[in-house]
Amino acid sequence: MKTRFKFLSFLMASLLVCCSKTKEESSVNIVAQDQRPNIILFVADDHGTDAIGAYGNPIIKTPNLDQLAKEGTRFNNAYCTSASCAASRSVILSGMFGHATGSYGHVHDYHHFSTYDGVASLPVLLDSVGYQTARIGKYHVAPEKVYHFNTVLEADPRNTVEMAQKCADILKSEKPFFLYFCTDDPHRGHPFEPEQWDMPNNFGNKKEGYKDVETITYKPEDVLVPEFLPDTKQTREEIAQYYQSVSRIDQGFGKLMQMLKETGKADNTIVFYISDNGMAFPGAKTTVHEPGIKLPCIIKDPTKKEQVAISDAMISWVDLMPTILDMAKVDIDASRFHGNSFYDVLYKDNVQGWDEIYASHTFHEITMYYPMRVVRSKNYKLIWNIAYPLEYPFASDLWASSTWQSIYKNDVAYFGPKTVKDFLFRPEFELYDLKTDPNEINNLAYNKSFKIILDKMKNKMKAFQTKTKDPWMIAWSHDASLQGTGVNL
Image (tube, rainbow, N blue to C red):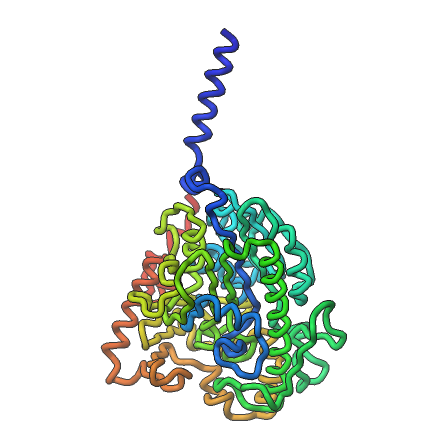
């Protein structure tokens, strides 16, 4: 009798455990582990499309990234949703806009923004279906229980070759693996404020270099100055340092690809190369103009039979998580994400329906309150500067940069093609036709001829904010019902 009772108890407990599993967790039983691809998500820090050979820069040396583009799909219209490190990374790993997850800005020091506990992140869902999840380098999201990885690897995040070497055991994993590889390059390096105002930031570069890394330097007179920046001695010196840091990334990426090939797993490993936001220069990082949010995205998927392609499909970092889950054959409820899987458009030159993206920036540092919302629909782009009466706030490292100080200290009237006044004080709405005005100079928002287009874009923005439960929706009408009750229930 006791034996029978024990058996029945065990059977009921087993049924309860099985029934309590989520749909995501139970899917591991449907797809065999050896049918799931390995996935490497390589994320650079503050790297724009301006500094990769594959995106048209003939000066910078990025042979390994260029090779990835030759073998995979290069996206020409890939966008982050917030041009700030922590906020952007939360989107990459959650598939949701930061205004819906509490990830408004930086997590470190006194900023202390953090994702809501109930958010299901990419590493956690991949772990639930049998993936070995590992991260190395820059993390910059919180809390850890939301963004939990099985394995945390340690290496100098400025030495991507060393980082790659530390990943050897993960690449040999018997289980399918998800490797989140995040460099500190080419972020500006400490000290952010130089001893003399006109000295360039080092961008992590050191005179003695890094072990196993070839130091590749650039002459300031040879670099390409993007049109939104002033072409000054200081700007060129800083871009030269930035290029050097990017070339260090490329070497580490090449080392990682070499090691992957040596394991024999290259044919079943999907590789992503992206950045969290644009180059760390005023006018790019922390802005929602094109240099801040339009980023490199190169994906190689050897499990697909199609040939290489260059894609003009508009994709966004909210699309990354559903895409990766799709690749990993994880059966999930797509409605839980703000983005959509773009897996089907890989290796396709002409695609339909991928012609609209949205962006949502609120903070960088906590002292940088300047909420902005964006919709780009085909060629038109609308920016809503919600706090437009305020002076545009600077990231501390960008303010201290010799690029900005060369303008500020010398009382120069222009910063690149824009006046300093227009750079610092922005209108409530900015509407641009990117086909004829890719540098976003001619604001059409107050041109009567474009009123119909402006109204259409505003309606798209409102619909986006409603769908994603954006608290800043209140700013359109000051409807107090959007504030909530103020009572904890």
